Figure (cartoon, rainbow, N blue to C red):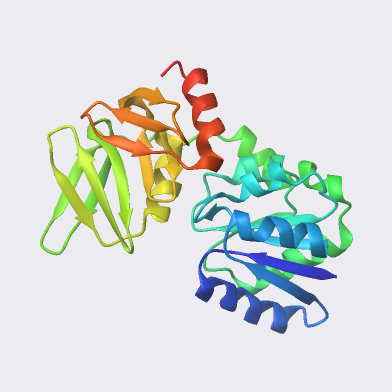
Length: 249
């Protein structure tokens, strides 16, 4: 079985590769990629049988990669740091869904499923049924932001946008505050997307309730309620327009 690993963190790719070499040495890991744009041509060219796919990548979601691929004759195991994408993962016919850091036993189980289950069987996975039937967690209303000297509790309604600068993320609030935390934007993307936020660019995560205007020039610009302008990436432009229209923003 030919396998490809797609994860934007090198240490995560190495960790998974090490586990696979131990629990399933018969697998052939043919390629690795760190982003949607990097993975897309490789998947088309190499046609792996199994994709270990991180949900949140630097230039989009793992789901974006699957939506772009017309050729889908492969099986998918999603790997991520949070579980709120689980139902969507199973709707993409995921064979399994593993939380980081991956447990070797779970990886071995996922590989066994990939070897034995027909492609369409994932829809009927027992865990998918439980996820659909169980009540959803109430959406979070606040977030704790820790800097070097304190922890600030911020209401999500007061967060206008988040901006990435390397390993740091800056939160811009309605009170004119800028709160810098030493965590990557990717982590907040996973945490806040279910709460009405949207990743419009590799460096920008916005609160959709604070979008005031969408300017269609070039790739697109969002004008926020505080007057700031946020660049939209070319590959996210259509998605941004669609979600704004859908939500009547």
